[in-house]
Length: 327
Ligand code: AHN
Ligand code: ZN
View 1: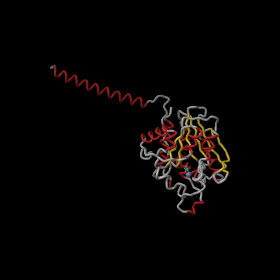
View 2: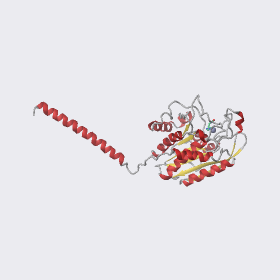
View 3: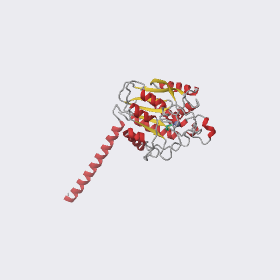
View 4: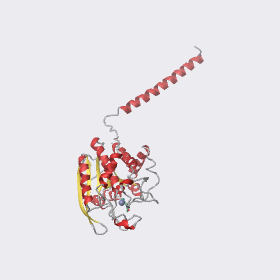
């Protein structure tokens, strides 16, 4: 064989070997993907139809304004469902005085899985609905309570669907679902008049010296044309958590919903969790600087018909991934 031909043959061999080696390494990494180590937990699929049904269950009670019979009945329902999904449920009852002197018979509902596991996170939402549609264009509607399909029920529904998944497949970490009461019986002219349930919980945790790695609050996560931007409180108190959640959303293809433009300043339950309980907590809330809350906010239009399953699906999928991918 001529020297030149030998070089060509050798080169061909080398290329062939490299290609084979390449194929082998692809095959072996596929094999590794197919056979995850035993501690790996697959992320369960968040079911938006089931979640939507949880919204409807709540709105079927009517507006869940504190001191109403619908509020009592819905609270009982939430305790029942969370217990059925294997949680240890603690009810934190307190009479909380609102801005107008009304004494609200309040009930924070805390559902815990693996309560002894110090490696835990919590997910939260408010379950009450507002006493007045004071943002409605028609002043005659200001005496009506808000149905709160989005403002209240949507966040709770995402958490109930996650509770259903946790009952089937335990995540690696302990979990608390905290449903705050009396969030929305406030007046924007009176400081600290919103978020009465979370203020109470922040001062009186459901277990002494409660701690968690972080928390995620869901508020208005079921509307149409959603925009979730990182709000200033989340960025200030829990930037790493916010980045993790928004990065996960982008990775899952929801970058159009979880946008990177800055959100505004929102005082919500997460503010009091951060301030009083000292646990980093972010808010996933439909709110944008200069635009504000969705059009249905605190109006007679915040009803089941204006809930969008695909919004519930996006938020639920992101939060489910965050929960199940934690070690
Ligand atoms: C204030 O309007 C001060 N905070 C909004 C919190 C809220 C109301 N979330 C839902 N409804
Ligand atoms: Zn509200």
